[in-house]
Amino acid sequence: MELVFLGTGGAETTPKVGCLCSICQEARHRGGRFVRNGPSVFLSGASVLFDTPEDVDKSLEREGIHEARHLVYTHWHPDHTGGIRVLEQLNMDWLDPKGRRVTHVWLPSWVREDFRKRHGLEENLEYFERAGIARIHEVGEGDPFQLDGISVRPFRMTQPGLTAYVLEQESRRLVFALDDTKDWKPSIEFLEPDLLVLETGWFERDLKGRVIVPTGHSIRNEEASFEETLGIIERINPRKAVLTHIEQLWARSYEDYLELEKKHHGQELQFAYDGLRIKL
Ligand SMILES: [Zn+2]
Ligand SMILES: [Zn+2]
Image (cartoon, rainbow, N blue to C red; front, side, top):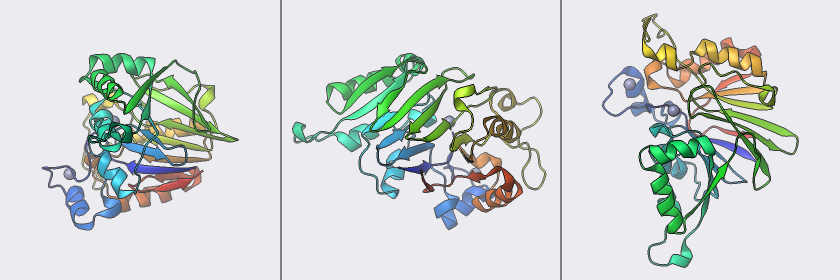
């Protein structure tokens, strides 16, 4: 099993269209690890895609991934669902209905509730189901479901609609908390996994000391800061932590995150980049 980081950007990708900041310009000129597509990861072997940001088709193409037998959603936010039509791209055969493929779509009950209310997401999936290219499975909190040898359990997080996952294969255990970890108090199921994948959180200042998120800004109440993220890592105590969902807004480039990794060497902490692969 291999974990592939398809996109490591957040609600904003890098470069962000229309933005001429130095981070976005550097991404345009240097490409590769300086570019961050929308947030999603993929488990090879079991063929599981987590979330569908707008540009997920481009990320799958870049990684040479040509099918997804399973699709698991973490929550309804547009940066995680805006590319839901990728199922049509992957599975539809307009000329020969027998040539169509099926992706199993796994929705925790609270995520499905949101899909029914938000952006026509449920409607989209039901259309795909009628077309024979998706099958929806609703799952309850803490109830394990099996994806080709991987046992997966969904749990609600503190932020409304959010899901954290515990994944187990043989003796290995992974925890995904891919977004909106603010005020999350991980319960005992989450502790001491082999790998923890977590959102990065916001930075108060850029590297020149200029304030990015001023006191009183709503981001402070709604999103975890990088310091809070470090606190969650300390509590969960994984063998390795990989941070993703990195906004261009934080004014740090791929190379700056490498420097930051060195400062936290003892924590076995790594910042993800698009195309990072971790063997499990
Ligand atoms: Zn997000
Ligand atoms: Zn920018």
